[in-house]
Length: 427
Image (cartoon, rainbow, N blue to C red):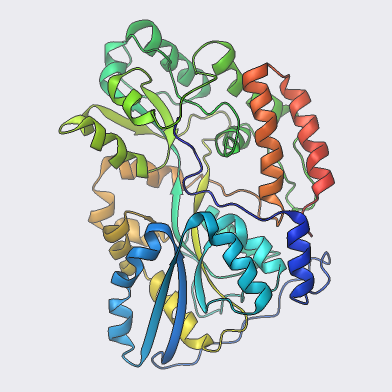
């Protein structure tokens, strides 16, 4: 089974967050007031030294991208420290508490509210434009109406399907609504000898990343617009969760899938449909070999009221207390340029967060990437609250009960609502 959490970012427990807040001298919260406006950035080239933390493959590849920045700013030195994803959050929170955070860092999208609550991130100066970012991406760096840092790259989820097997089953166009997705999954089983019609995660860590977009698509949500109250219990949410459950109760999706077989099952046709992000393109093509790219396609999430999908990725932030603030923001500005985002795409295949970057042929010429571009217009980030990861874990556990043990969706949502209210939003 392919875990949906490849680019979802974990958080810290509420008790630990509170401890860190106290150690950082965190101000009282809850008044909803915006941060003071950011100081402007001094003109002229960057100078001095900068420390940058970046995770995973991005941390390994970032030095190559910084060549242009250092050519423009010959008197600055940039030291990049790659940090493993599985230890990154703890490394950051420890550094924040100790006052040893880097100047600039890649920040997981679900960490933003927590780090802002710890008074760790600087607001974004007005001179750094934010009007060209996808709306969902900009929302991920906006806390209490103040923008902190900028989106660096984005990702969203589409439905991958075997076009050749769909045609064998008599379906020549991808579905556009909920009923059509069910019909395609059933047709794969009935007419294309698939073992399962679609691969879906039956609860467990990260399953919310597929279920929550269905709730959004049905007009639901899990936090009110003010970000202060949880709204798990609602008719749209119940209908969406029941729809997800139906794939398991109707035998279209495996309630006990094995780990790590998504690519093989997709190529063999045993499970010819799944939902995932852009990184799976190279993964399935590597298994399928030459010519396999022509056998499959991707399409945007099916519509109920809207076509909604999960928006992930990572952001760039400047940390409070940096001794080289101007150079730090100049680096963020450089990495935010559309042409630099295109260059980063060529190095990393991370999808640009700037809309203008998608006009470049190297990004837009691939039909499958264009489908991701379309989905980005309606993709949404999870709630920007400090406790989201804790709440999401409670929801994941209830989704598992729904998918594996036939728990009524209404009961699962009531339990999640109670758990979420007990945890709070961290405000």
